[in-house]
Amino acid sequence: GDSVTQMEGPVTLSEEAFLTINCTYTATGYPSLFWYVQYPGEGLQLLLKATKADDKGSNKGFEATYRKETTSFHLEKGSVQVSDSAVYFCAPLPPGAGSYQLTFGKGTKLSVIP
Amino acid sequence: DAGVIQSPRHEVTEMGQEVTLRCKPISGHDYLFWYRQTMMRGLELLIYFNNNVPIDDSGMPEDRFSAKMPNASFSTLKIQPSEPRDSAVYFCASQGTNFPGVAFFGQGTRLTVV
Image (cartoon, rainbow over all chains, first blue to last red):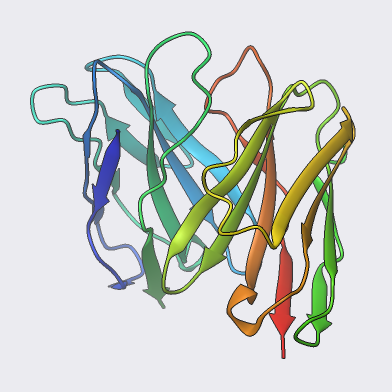
């Protein structure tokens, strides 16, 4: 079945630093790809997504590009803020009709210090 | 819509007691998922429903766990009898048919079994 590997955390950055969180996946065919974010004490929420190769998802200054050749979907942000401190989850969704079951990575905890 | 609503937010119970967690999905969403989150195991899918019918319960840890969805606006996850190793945060999430992979999570129920 599908699987996803995220870089291990925790990641600690100073405010305004550049962020990269790596994500690679194994899947049959071409899945849709998602990043979810979990702020302290809350449930996960969708951050961004990409549904086909070379698509770039973006939201709140975060970006990720669907790289078919490297089966990757790395999350980036040019200048992090303290409010970005959270746990980030990469999740592929298998292709095909009737596919709704996300496979979540283990999550990468980001702490941004002033 | 108020989003996915879970209750209670916190539950502390003694080992051996029955615990019932509740979830109200977003109106119109046809898919409902139950997840468990722990530090050791991350986010695990327990079971999911489509149109109130259980589709995949392979993630349910053992017979002590059961889930029902009697109608489109309500689901329960029951643990009987509860054990200390069941202590975790339990999340409910829903998805709409037209947006596969776009999941809306509740705020979770933090269960502590002592």
